[in-house]
Image (cartoon, rainbow over all chains, first blue to last red):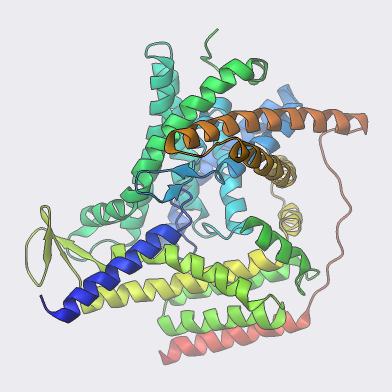
Amino acid sequence: MKRWQRWLIVSVGAVLFLVFEARPAYAMHIMEGFLPPLWALFWFVVVIPFWVIGVRRLRALISDTPEVRLLLGFAAAFTFVLSALKLPSVTGSSSHPTGTGLGAILFGPWVMSILGSIVLLFQALLIAHGGLTTLGANAFSMAVVGPWVAWLIWRSLNGRAPFWVTVFLAAALADLTTYVVTALQLALAHPDPVGGIGASIIKFGAIFAVTQIPLAISEGVLTVLIMNALQTNAKAELEALAVKGIRP
Amino acid sequence: MLRVIDRYAFTNRLRMVDPAQKSAIALTTIVLCLVLDRPLVSGLALLWMVGLAIGYARLPWRVVIAVLSTESMFLMLSVIGIAVRLGVDASTAAVPIGPFWVSMDRSSVLLAGQVFIRVIACVSALNVLALTTPLVDLIDLFHRWRIPTILIEVMILSYRAIFLLLDTLERMVIAQKARLGYASWRSTLRSSALIGSQLFMAAYQRSRMLEQALIGRGFCGEVRVLPIRYHHDWRLWAFLVLMVITVSLARMWG
């Protein structure tokens, strides 16, 4: 190996290290401008039906129980602030919980599709993370697919499997599917000229696996601990929210 | 980051300019960069946006550069996926990783560079909007666009609640750290879980208190506030026209 090659490898390693350490590791949002116009539009078209139904559900919920209106505002803020928590992860860098699993268990997937999208919009406008033209794609992966996966696991396994297993799977798999869907969205927009879309999924998946897989595990454990603490400390609040499947 | 951006959003020189005007500039820039998609176009747009933020909105250059460089760090990671090629057969100079052959060539690196500069230009436009416009002004704009009232309500409430909860969160973290919280991997998880559940209850109780306070003052489902009087800045419109013209010229030339 020649000398300059060794230097090249060392400097590439240093850059990679810096990038991984310095990156603000919220969930994996697609940045503004990363998707070509047609794909940006496509994901908006996909997500709009969920928003329409979500708003209808929200209206029905509020006409039934007007006092829930304020709680919804705080729920969105709670999800936003939760993503400011630092979680330890295996690689040494820290990552942040997304709150999609917990939110879906507490508020249901339709409401979460609206709250999650508001959180994504705020992240774009308050901390310049994510984007406006990519909002459709990000909302689909984080506010629609993630919560639905969590909710389906929660509803189907509850009572059949131990409580902590259910909560862990719901939260961890919500994160993992969000990550896979985002990799798919990136791959569709930027397919590999040699290997096509399949190769591209593997590439983007591998790049983010370093932070996203530890994140899924940490968030699973965290959500189990939060749900346990909520069951002992906040029983009345959970009952008021009518969270289904809480241990009597 | 949150508090920094929020502070400058309220104190910059473009604060009282109509949010519709500012978002028109940001969105036009983003759409132009995406549709024209040439490195020269994006580079020019990036210069215009940084110039607008530092020269006209009088934001400190340190803040503008700091926000932009954090974002480019994150972006480099995503762009690697475009610069690297993946194939199952060793056609050209390639490094084997598992069953795949990873390679890089001139065109793929150029493509990655093109995406990089396009994203940075778009992000700088988004930064101009985020750094010059407080979220309350944008929510007011959404109201004018006839976004459903229920969404506006949730947004107003959560914007207020974010800062309340963030203060609570910071105090909780300080208290935990003083008592050996976050000392190890295990205790970090336990401390985070405690915060997660306590913060949920704090949020719930705060919302109940706010509800009672609002009902006591005749709240019936809509928070009404007086609209702020914005002004239109003709220089900004001139800036927009100039930018569109130069960027279109750049597209024809390069």
